[in-house]
Structure formats: structure tokens, C-alpha cells
Image (cartoon, rainbow, N blue to C red; front, side, top):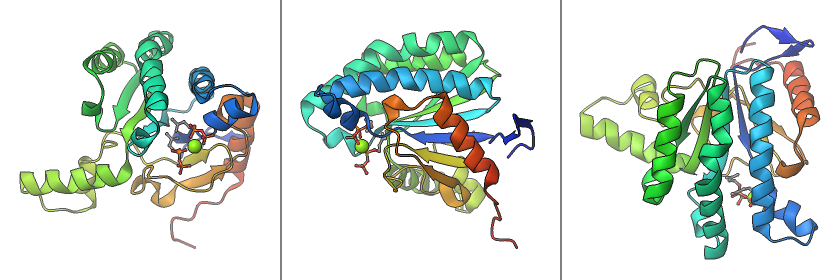
Length: 233
Ligand code: IPE
Ligand code: IPE
Ligand code: MG
């Protein structure tokens, strides 16, 4: 956690978002669920820009879980189309501003054209120094943990906290200081189970497509008031 402040706010080094509530946002408006996901992409772009502007260095998003693959085919297809059509376009402007983008999850699930756009985003943003944006795609923390253990075994590496962490998708990232979940659900849903050991959890009732600058500032105010003890007194 950085001690710098902006408007008397403590600015976390790493903030992670479990972007939830897209479907409910759409259903409330009698729209198909995919309309909520489309709106959610716009929110994500604005939130990245706001976080960068506030000086947050690491920004993670849970965009598609290993379990989300089991949703009805038309919803999964709509999500794939959204990723295909938007990922590069959405991130290009941010990449040009010096944001580095990485992905976590089993990307082998995605079609070749999607994987190519992800690779393009990774390559074009590799020198970005302003902030790191980490997007979970086909990400599941249990899958990540099992993969890390198997890699340690295959490499003959003895498993300790340091070697294990080096085999997680998040090897290059610090643990999140704060995990934000929108839409009022109070669970991690297989997100960063290992990395969340000492993360502050903040749940807001706001549905992800409605999440804006004011919500972000209110979360940072709440985070600033939390006392983090890490097991000490
Ligand atoms: C989060 O919104 C986005 C994804 C999981 C892809 P949901 O689609 O889970 O929206 P709700 O929870 O059904 O409202
Ligand atoms: C978590 O939301 C996954 C993402 C935000 C990508 P879900 O909507 O899938 O989680 P549950 O099913 O409510 O736990
Ligand atoms: Mg949900």
C-alpha cells in the first residue's frame, strides 16, 4: 500500500474488481443479458482511466470465470463476440497512454482470432510504465492453484510460498490491497483465493454497468478508513 494520498485518500497499489451485475442491469431494463455485458465493457474502460488518473499502479478485473463457460451457449457466444470485437479497440487508447495489459486464465479455451487479439494487446502494451491492467479471462483460482502445483512438480521445484507464487498467473503482480465486488454479492466466486489472503473486501450494491467515479471514490474512502493489521497487533 502506498502512503501517497490524493484528496486525502489512501491510494492502493493494487485494486481488483469482480465485475458483477451485468445481467441484472439488463433484465431490470427488459433488455437481453448481453446488453448488460456490452454496457459493462464501457464501464471497464472508464474505471481503468479513473484508476490510472488516481495513480493506482495495478488494476485487475474478473471478466470471465472458468464457471461462466457453463452458462447457456447464446450468452457465452455473446461474451465471446464482445471480447472479439472490443478487446483491442477498448484497450488501444489506454495502451497509447502507457498502460501495460496482461491476462490471467487458461487462454487456450479461446478461438484463434481472440487469442491473436490478446497477443496483440500484450505485445503492443509490453513497454507500458504507467500502470498494469490484469484481466481474468477463463480464470479460476482453483484451476490456477492446481496448475501451479503441477508445474512445481514437473520442474522438480520444492513448493514453498515463493516458488508457488511464481507459478501463479499473478507471478508478476503484488497481491491485491483491495477487492471490490459490485451488485451486492459477498463471495469471491473462485477469484484470487490465494492472493486475497490479506486483501480488504469491499462490496457495493451498485451493478457493474452503473459503477462510476463516485462509486470508486467512495470505495477509496472506505479503504482509507480500514486498519490493516496483517495478523499483528
Ligand atoms: C458479470 O455479470 C459478468 C460476467 C460474469 C461475465 P453477470 O452476468 O454475472 O450478471 P448477474 O450477476 O447475472 O446480474
Ligand atoms: C463472478 O461472477 C465472475 C465474474 C465476475 C467474471 P458470477 O456472477 O459468475 O458469480 P456467482 O455465480 O454469482 O458466484
Ligand atoms: Mg453474476
